[in-house]
Image 1 (tube, rainbow, N blue to C red):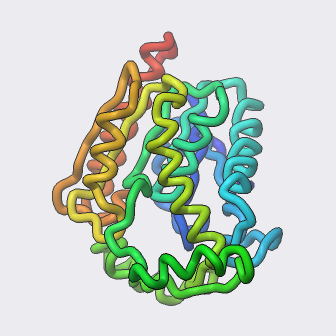
Image 2 (image 1 turned 180 degrees about the horizontal axis):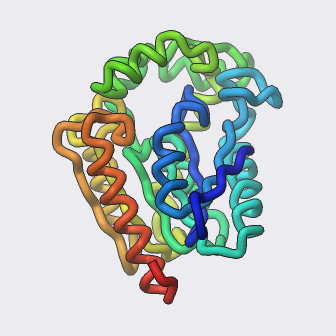
Length: 267
């Protein structure tokens, strides 16, 4: 994991969880925005992605591997003795949800960015059925998810950078796919087990990867005392890379600042 300290006096810590296929280096702009706003940031690369070498690229043995990793990041955040916020994008949002369903963690709030609660493009039925026996006999078999960079964001600079990014995962294992699908199912099945933490869900209105209807359904069912849903009409999946990202960041920061005020921190 990596740590970036705030410019000046810090008022909180943001633990960020990236999405599938990507890595922490794609979050340079967002890290700097939080840092300049008075927050420490902790982030790492998830197992099998980015600069990690603990497992084969694009492969995990269990979705639990992700939860274990993120718990370590949160423990590191506690060392600052400041309010901690969790920010998860896409699969990172799903990881945050599953963590809040499985553990009781001391955080002041959570932000979900286009959380992966259902996919728009799914494999053909025959391939989906085939993935069950393959998951047993050849779980590390890797397949091309056929997600093109232009579906993630309208930001041409980001698209160009991604095309030349050697850390970007281009194939995932059968086990990874089955674990992802099982975790999405559990996020709905265990919805009443989620820890009651203030939550902001922000969703790209023109998301080409995550099905926003599933996100809305999950949000409406979530039994939380304080929750907000904000849809950004023209945005694709990666809302913090979109042309509107400055406005989106301000909205996210306002949520965090409001939680700090609610618990007695001066903002």
